[in-house]
Image 1 (cartoon, rainbow, N blue to C red):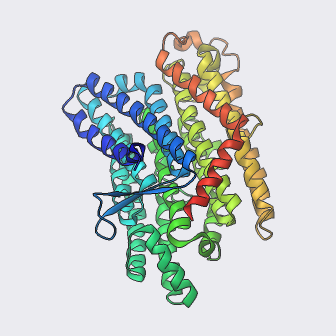
Image 2 (cartoon, helix red, strand yellow):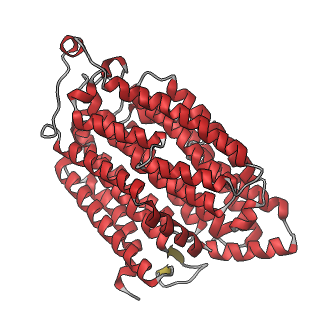
Image 3 (cartoon, rainbow, N blue to C red):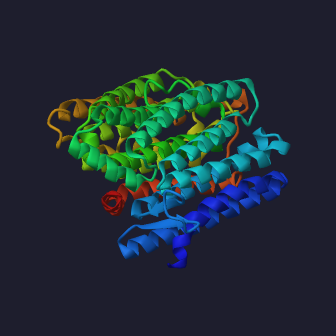
Length: 501
C-alpha cells in the first residue's frame, strides 16, 4: 500500500483530534492550530487526488485491518478526493475571510470553542465524503449537526439562539427519517457496508422481493437528507441561521454543510441502492417537484427581503432547488450537473457572504439595502467581489453559475416528460435571480449623495482588511476558473461517478 493511501483516514483523525486540542489553547494558539490543520488537510487531499487520478481507479482502506462486518472501511475515488480538496479550500477561505468579524463579535474566552466546532465540522464532512459504511455516515451526520448548531449560536444573542433551536429541530427530524431508512435497509439486506448493501439490493430487485419496503427506505433517506439540506419547504430555519451568525459561520453553513448531506445522498443513490433502481422509482419525481418549487419560491422570498444577508440566505434555498431538480431528472448527465452546481454554489455563495460583510463594514455595519447605497465605492474590492458573485448566480457567461444552468438545460433535453417544466423553471428562476441580485449591485453602485456623511460611513481599502481582501481575490479567481475551465471539472465528476458503480 502506498503511503498516500493513508491520507484520507489521517485527515479525518487529524481534524477530529485538533478540535479538543483547541479547547486548552488561548484564542491565538487555537487560531494558528486551525489554520495549520486546514493547510495540512488541503495538501493531503491534493496528494490523494493526484494519486487516484494517476491510478485511474478507486481503492478501499480497511481501518484496523479487520474486514466488514467487524471492521470499518473508507472508499476513495476521484470524486471523493476532489470533493475533499474542494471542501478544505472553501473552509480555509471562509475562515480567512471572517477573521476580523470573529475577533470583534465573539467573546475572547469563546473563540477557541469556535475552532473546536470548525474542526469537528470538517471532520464530519470528510467522513461523509470517504466512508463506505452507512451507519458511520449517520454518526457523522449527527456530529455535523451539533457542530453547525455551535457555529450558529456562538454569538450568544437572542436571534442566533432562536435560529440554532429551529435548525436543531428540523435537523433532528431529518436525522430521524434518515435513521429509520437505514434501519429498514439493514433489516432488508443484513448489511451496513455500502457495497454489500448494493449487492443485496440487486438480488431483491431481480427477485421482486420486498419492493415496497425498499422504496420506503429510499424515500425516508432521501426526504431526511432533503430536510437537513434545507430543500423547500423545509427551509424555515435557514434565513435566521445564515443571516445572524458570524460571517465565517454563514459562509461555511451555506457552502459546505448542506453540500455534505447532498453528497451523502449521491452516494446512497449510486453506491447503496443503484442509480438505475433510483431513477425508476417515484422518489425522483418527488425531488423534482420540490426542487422546482424551491427554485421559484426561494427567489421570490429573496426579492421581498430588505436585509442583504437574509437575501443571500433565501437565494441558497433556490440554489438547493436546482440541485434536487437535477436529481429529479433522473439521468447521469443531470446528476453531473447537480454535482457541478454543488461546487459552483459553494464557491459563489461563500464569496457573496464574505463580500457582503465587506460592504456592510463600509456602511456602518448596517445590512439594510438603503444604507448600502454607494457601498461599492466605499469598499471597491468587496463591491467588485459581490458583483462577480451576483453575475455568477444570475448565470452570466464566464462565471461558474452559467455552466451550471447550461448543464441543467442540456440534461433536461434527455427527459421528454420533464423537459418543458425544467426549461420553464430555469428561465423563471434566472429572471428572478437577476431581479434581486442585480438590484443589489445597482444599489451598491448608486450615488450615495449625502448619505455617507450623514451616517458617518467609512472608506475601506485592501490594506485595512488584508485577510478579507486575500480571501475575496482567491474566491474571484476560483469562480472565474470554474467558469472558464469547466470541462476538466466536468470530466472529473463523470469519472468519479463511473467509479461509484
